[in-house]
Image (cartoon, rainbow, N blue to C red; front, side, top):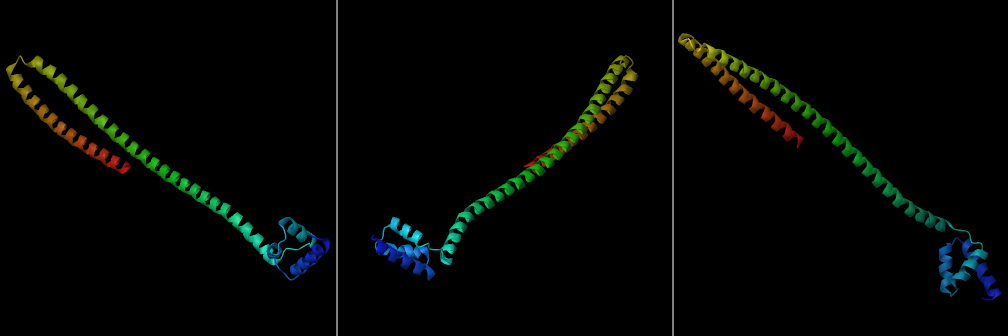
Length: 183
């Protein structure tokens, strides 16, 4: 482009800029009249075109657009972190409840073991009585007395076995209920 035309275009661009026309609009106008991009940039530079309010507004929009997405991603990550924290708290509470249930089961098993030990002691006592009875079989009258005592012991054992069966049923029901709560 000739220097005189170049100077006139620069003056026109200065006037357009002074009127508040946006740099993007000025560039579009220069393109429409057939000026090449590299010459347009040089003309804008020579005209020392100042950005207008519209140019600044568009620049702010571009910055907002670039900042909005990372802020959105940061918020999503914060929410995901909060969700993980909430889940961890839920798991911690569930683990604590499970621990308490296991303690209850352990206490029930301990009680059951004590009762089984008592039954075992009763059976040992019965065995000792049986041996003692065997020695006394020689006397028939003593045999009938011992038989009556043995009958009473057997009745006691039958009652104990019934109680043990009821206890086993109750323990199994308690364990079943605890396991259902754990699910």
